[in-house]
Length: 206
Ligand SMILES: N[C@@H](CCC(=O)N[C@@H](CS)C(=O)NCC(=O)O)C(=O)O
Image (tube, rainbow, N blue to C red; front, side, top):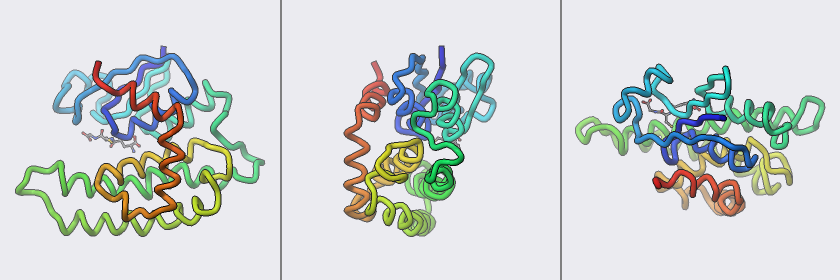
C-alpha cells in the first residue's frame, strides 16, 4: 500500500490531491507541522524531516512534483501527463516545475518571515519583497489561464496541481485579491474538483 506523510495544506497536499484524483488506495500519515519538531521519530523515515514523503514498495520520494510524476506514470497510466511528441509536452513540463521552483519558493519566504519565525525574528520588509516577487512571477500563469481553462488547454493535468498548490498557499497568505480575477476563476475550477475536495476532506483530523 502507498504511504504518504503529510501535514495539512503543506506541499504534500499536491500528492494527496493526485491520489484522490486517481482514486488510488493509500495510507495517510497526518503529522503536525513542522514534523522535525512535533514528530522526532519521523527523522528515521525521512532524514530531511520535510514533507511530503512517499513510500511505495522500494520507492522513496521526498519532492512533491517528483511524486506527482511518479504516481501518475507508475499508477495512473499517465492520465494527467503529456508525453514527448504531444504538442503541450514542453510547456506542461515547464508549468509543472514552475509551480514549485518559481512560484512556491518565494511564498515560503513570505510564510517564514511573516508567520513562522518567532516574533522578534520576523521581517515584514523581506515578506513584502517576496510577496511582490511571487505576484510578478504569477503573471505568466495568469496570461495562460486567461486564454485556456487549464494551463495546458482544456485538459486538467499535473501542472494544474503543481501551480494550483502555489495558488492555495498564496490564498492562505491573504493574496487572493492581488492574484486577480483570472486566477480567482481558475481557482474555482480547481477547488470544485472532486479530487481536490476529497483531499481536503481526507486531511481533516479524525
Ligand atoms: N521542494 C520540496 C520542498 C519540501 C519542503 O520544504 N516541505 C516543507 C513543507 S511545505 C517542510 O517540510 N518544511 C518543514 C521543515 O523544513 O522542517 C517539495 O516540493 O516537496
